[in-house]
Image 1: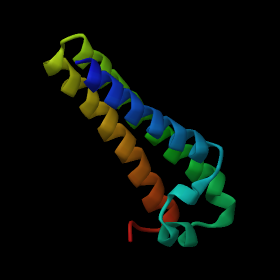
Image 2: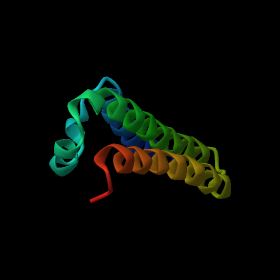
Image 3: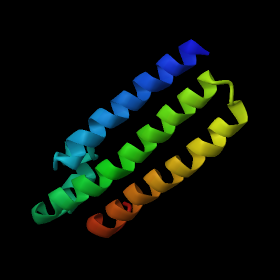
Image 4: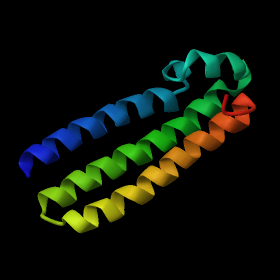
Amino acid sequence: MLSELLILSSLSLIFFGIAHSMYKGNINWLHSYHRKRIEEKDYSIVGKWCGIGLYLIGMGILCMGILLYLGKEKLSSHVLIPFLAIGIGINLYVIIKYNKGLF
């Protein structure tokens, strides 16, 4: 159980680090195809919203690790799924809106 907490905490820290970088306006984490299609004036907006989405995903992973450590296996997946859905949804919405499509 402690190993799961450590692994999931480490993974969430990676998400938090990338999210912080993107929130500050560094969109280099996006695929080059998407960066080329986003106008330069929108970089900070895209970075901010993608960062928020990644923060949510990282928070869901961290909460899951804590709940698994506490022995709440069933509850952990019920907590993770909404964080993932909202985080991925925000990222998809922003990419589709400012990239003028997903592909």
